[in-house]
Length: 169
Ligand SMILES: Nc1ncnc2c1ncn2[C@@H]1O[C@H](COP(=O)(O)OP(=O)(O)OP(=O)(O)O)[C@@H](O)[C@H]1O
Image (tube, rainbow, N blue to C red; front, side):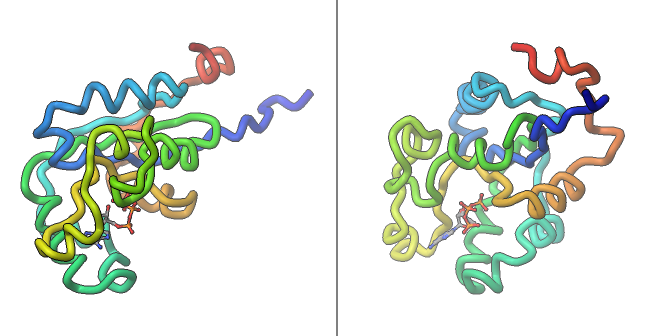
């Protein structure tokens, strides 16, 4: 048997956005990740500035346009966020499933966005404000590597050393 079997364990970045922190939902949201055997290996609270927001959402303006970039960047700086590095089997995809679709009205019941938010794309377009959808999570494994590295130094991330620790619950 190989010394280190590939368990499919990976890391992903999660942000509890200003609306989640302000509404006192942090604990309930984190519990959902922990219940799905996603382990916290890094955590911090931060107030974003314009420069760091640009680094985090570096491709958003190109993907969705300047108006959406600007409203999202503004929203992300309205209050503190909580950043987490989560580790687990298929963590990137699993976290995206747990948080649900980008537009909360389309997010399934049982997902974080589906249960705790309600905004539609149309309401954001009318108001010119960002979709307040509580959580950001890396969209794929390349994005996860970039975002985890942007937010957390090596020394700010912890290791579960043994197989038992990695899988235990
Ligand atoms: N049509 C829109 N109007 C206003 N804000 C939007 C719109 N589309 C996206 N956003 C904002 O931009 C963020 C990034 O959009 P993206 O397409 O990357 O969705 P996502 O990957 O589900 O969200 P996130 O990157 O925050 O995890 C969304 O979470 C939302 O806050």
